[in-house]
Length: 198
Image (cartoon, rainbow, N blue to C red; front, top):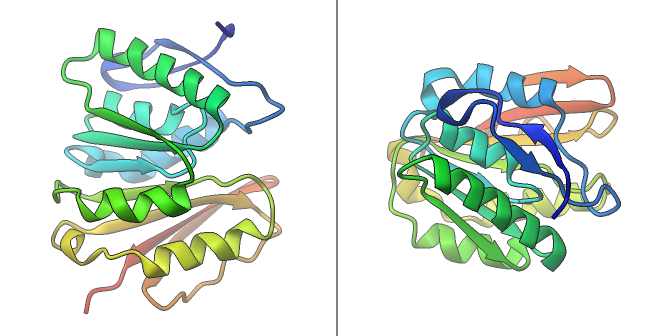
């Protein structure tokens, strides 16, 4: 098992050590970025549904559960990374009751629309996307988001958070979403979007 390399920052699981996959296959979210995300979310994390589209170590979704999210979903296509993700979920489930975490091995571009269609609305829906820093993936992410059926989630609100390279222009007016905030952390930035109503 990999050496514990990071900890849950706040909430019921604060201080719990979790594992990171190999840095050759993943790029972990820095603590300062994670802290910023959850400071921005504030109490809206309570009772939310948090989806980590590119699961990695599951650090964002498990932090969300620790802070009171109703559930977290994780998608990861690398089997070795997925194994570490599941180990982290098990560590949290041993400490937090209930710990409603569901993980799926496979391509998020294929799996997310299927699982989202069957997800019962429950609080704010938060989609967190931290794709590998490959420019061709950003247009693919926007195409995925634009084609998702999010109508059922509109009652509680939909928030998209993109972690991306600062030098990549994410677009400020995608057709279905409105940008509400951007934060820069050196070479990494966070962009926040909400789903427009009808």
